[in-house]
Length: 241
Image 1: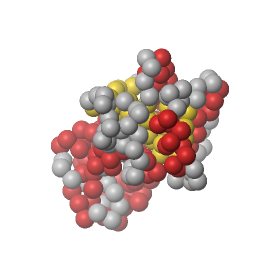
Image 2 (image 1 turned 120 degrees about the horizontal axis):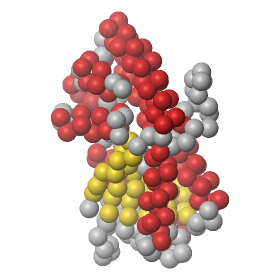
Image 3 (image 1 turned 120 degrees about the vertical axis):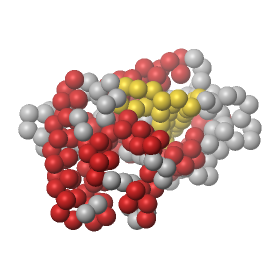
Image 4 (image 1 turned 30 degrees about the horizontal axis):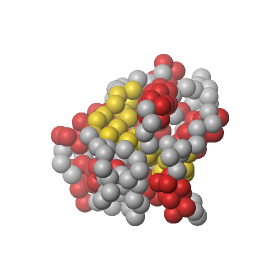
């Protein structure tokens, strides 16, 4: 069972998002007008990355923006904490995926402060299989934090029956691979997968773009020929506030 859960940005977070989106929109469109879409790929991706980081948590954005504190709240993080507590209190086990290792660190700090047991895996982890065995065989460890790249393949995590994608990946195939860690031979329960999306942001817009344009997932990954399916109008829509 897959579903999208919409979250609202906190007021201060929304102000930062709007200010940065306006600034980046002007920069990106000027770049595109000057060099063309194909040669502007990296600046477009970098700009979209910054907006996605704000959606996850403003702390991910290492950017000096006059008038904005480095310690802004995150509406998505608050919604995530409520969701996780409900799942854990219901006696379930959950996989939490993020592309941003720094976001996993923020979640890890919260779990440690809350004395909630968890397992952890990112690309730098040396104890990959120990973490998997510990999660699968310990009923008292309800949460497994996994970076999307580290957890995409080769893991069997059928002890979990919930999956949360903290930040949506634009290639649905990669996201599905991650969710499938729970949905293997030996899984006897229904698996619930949640994708957290901030309303009125690039996260919501990219989903609409995916639905409207087949192949857009590949189009926004560098080096893919289908990049040319993205238009200037698409970019205006993505950066609009």
